Image 1 (cartoon, rainbow over the protein chains, first blue to last red):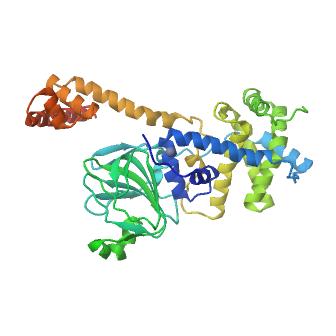
Image 2 (image 1 turned 180 degrees about the vertical axis):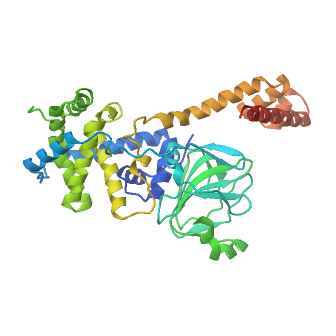
Image 3 (image 1 turned 180 degrees about the horizontal axis):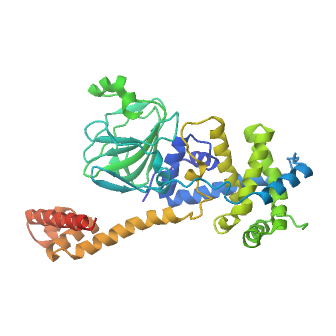
Length: 225
Length: 193
Ligand SMILES: [Zn+2]
């Protein structure tokens, strides 16, 4: 049972297409996995469509009759398939360390953007998902018994659990859970007996806050960028 | 030309069905005259550019003309379907204008115009079931004692100690049966690859 969801504001941004690409991917992946938010998304689509499509009285159309007729003519003469999106290879399986994971549809459709796995520190791996020129997006894999040093963020960290379970000081997160943290939260993500695959985006490098891990700060941008 | 306005959701939906089944140009013209000015107002607000706005209207309505068969009345209204097409085209226009390096496309985020829209979702939903079914089949091939332990732990979620108590056998036996069973399952899974 998924217990943490994106805010309504984020879902509206997702439906309108007005989030960063990285955030669209994280929210979209949650929506893939969450029937509750799928319903929300449908409702928001209806609402936004109504705003756009029913506010006609205020709009004095600038589309002249001649323009409209010309456009209709072009549409009737257009070939089916001209706007056909290029069919990309879609792969809904990803493997690491002998384990195979099924990717939710949003990630599967964008699997061609997923880069090679890189080993970061002891129990942590990441693979970049290259969809956003400004905001890094990564698949992050924590094997059993992993711990990410305590850190805060200058910006926002959005995470969705794809498979497995991890916890921090606040809660435990399982398949589909969406977690949004900002600079006010410090946390120490960790796994115990189960491993965990997540999709996460940061809009600024993380800042490690505790003990010796503070020494990592100069390098933190190497970790999650 | 019909004088009925596609204001009512049912009427707009029936026009789309008419376009999809009969390639009815009159039905499309009616839909076009209703929605195009609204799309144009939306696009002008979004882009602040007349020509780009016109391009968005044309590309959106061209998709409506060719892809009307992908409209699913049970999933939402005609207005909503057309809006989501415009939303996708807007997204691609904006990225193209900024000459973005990665070829992220709206259709891969919101696959509303994919011919087999549901296949991935179905695969995704099916995969777990399939895996569970396969695992269930493999479990049938285990010795009864091992199978019982596996079911109590992985299906009923009991701890190894609880299983030991329930079956009145030593904890060490539960552990070794679990280990042997998992080993056997692993072999069975790999022999299938
Ligand atoms: Zn949700």
